[in-house]
Image (cartoon, rainbow, N blue to C red):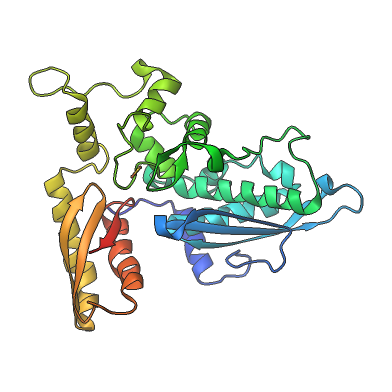
Length: 326
Ligand code: FES
């Protein structure tokens, strides 16, 4: 599926990639705050840096004057990062005031984002938060004393719920409530949890259990009825949700769409260098494939896989796709 981006999102993206004056792609040397979020292995990552005008006596009065980002991601990741920097610079915020910038502010600045891309705005807000925590450490500001919730140790100490994205229960509980997430696809869209192997969807203590616990069973997803008007077994319900809600396509349509994109967007490029790719298996949004010809055994196969195979599949089929070489 092609994403419907707002004109503002497209413009910010184009301005950034063309290095138009006033855009923010880059990194501040010796920054006053540095934060990172996401990981390249998971498909999106952002490094956010800012500089402040230092207050001579009270660091809490420092004012952010400059913000920059490096991002590894798609159109919306770049546009969301641009939006974040613009909001921060235009606001003349202190770092603590900047913590009030939410992912919704970023979405509003972009004049909307496709629901499947909301995680790009969340990534920006998380990287900003990490950068403010870094600034506080560097400037000796005790955020906890000032009543700022720094979510200490929630990633280090919590039970991992989604192994594919290394996301813990305390983090997911906080995000489900902060962002008012009501279904597993909403969680995936916002923070990516559940967007790869899907085994955390209905496992005991998994995403559905968290939703049920936070919102109450009746307010989370309604049971899916089978053709005879009866609730299916939990396992069948999980599969049905995974197949129908998560991709919006049947497994057959999904695999056909993937094959179409490979044929029209991927193979022509690989064939120019005497290579090819074939699908070995598809499990949820994990695509297992094998390189053939000149690509087989190529030293840059991992990069090729990411740039020439995975990215087009994310762009044209489903943003949560991950390609695994076998
Ligand atoms: S464990 Fe959550 S998507 Fe794989």
